[in-house]
Length: 340
Length: 139
Image (cartoon, rainbow over all chains, first blue to last red; front, side):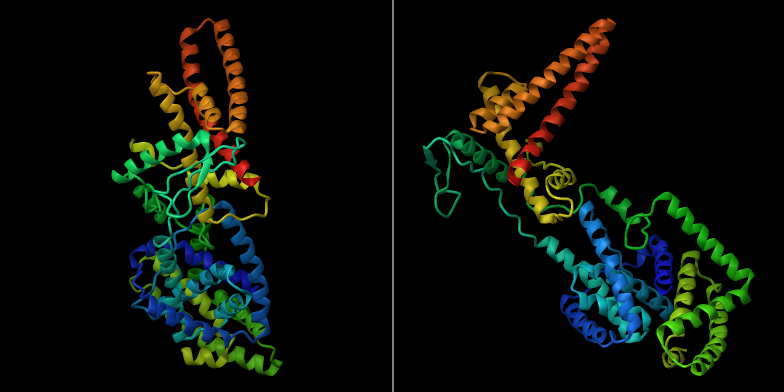
């Protein structure tokens, strides 16, 4: 239940990606990123104690394994887009939630304890943790860029065949600084000629030394503009239409049936509360009563704020934020009160 | 000369590498790049020998026979045998197509067909050479 709702939230947030390209910021200093990574690791290690977190860890691990194998088999490389909200705290909260989920998916390549710590994040919302995650999310891409730029270009070795004929000719040690390399006598002249051609090309600076990440600028820009679903893969036309229809349906439902939406939210919160914390019935009832009152005020406040002059995609993001807040707020009474 | 620094498409190289390996194997990007460079250099090595022969004989077109001759001259006998058999099969298919076109009595269509099959032959030959290289490395 929780996992499915999280996935829906992630897909909804991802659908708004093309509109958020303008707020991309890659200016992350490596030292700061390292410090933030350590801080986030320490903070995360403290949050992997509850049982529901462990259950989610198991599910997440299985999902990540499949995703990693499929991505490697296809050999594609996805362009990672990160956005850090600057002005609006509620917007920042929603973005950090999305980045947390993506970090969880990418960390499938890492060891198990990291995965467990990552899955523990969506249950708890704290301002310093969100800030750390916003920085930590930008770091892997930056590291990837560094690795790509500094990737050592191994020189192409000449083909060396084990010759059936006993006579082998030693090559001159001009290019090979180490011991002389013995090659097939038949290939000696061809190798020397080929070396001369390569030297000529290097003199003309026509050999590709540093590999370009892409061949065509226009195709690269097009790939950046394409909408991506959960997990970072491109959406095909059918899924795009489905997501747009779902978003429109959500808006209509919230406009028409406010009370029923409120009731549904309370029920989902009740279930989340039951799943996350195994408490007595009396405490559960009191918790739900208190949260329902504040929840009503919060929803109305968010609704007013949404319609006060923002473009449509940001409204969608706000909707997603509202849902996530309702889901996670019920889990921890003290946290929810502090957040308000 | 401007095309000398071209590399084979890396997606196709990765696909060919995957065909040889078991289904659950994973290939790193660095491995694909290394094989890509090796395959490109091997093709340049063979075609350079063939081109040199054409230059000596004052010819401008490199034929399949020239590639076969280059492979045998360089001591790559296994590749020479494979290319020879493939070239033989291709020419038989070409004769069958020619006879079929002659039966239809359309000379223009015949020329067009020859041109298309010629282009297909080149791409097929390169893919075959790369594939043989991959299989050799797998052994």
